[in-house]
Image (cartoon, rainbow, N blue to C red; front, top):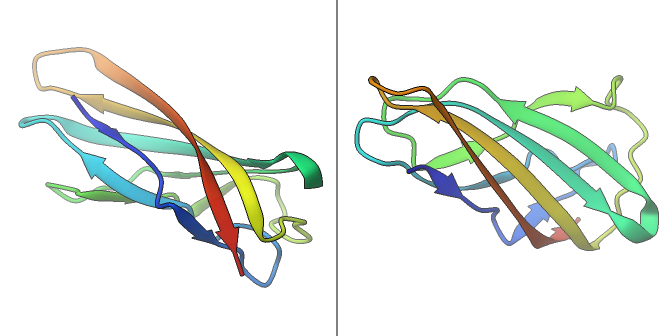
Length: 112
């Protein structure tokens, strides 16, 4: 069973967005990781972004959501250092099974 979480600290880039959310990944033997979609939300700034990763090596031990999904264009973010919420869904499959979906969320700290 695949699963993961977020790196505890995520960097805010010069454009005001988190580039790029990352975290460790635990993969079961024979499981292929297909996609991870990530949402970062910060309540007191009302900021949100969505990014994803859809290309993985043979035995990934981490994920990096380095493709912008929302907002587009990727300019003018308003994240500030401090707490935020990270939410992710990972899509995986075994050779003999349908797709599996794994969700997780946790508080992260945004840093400059």
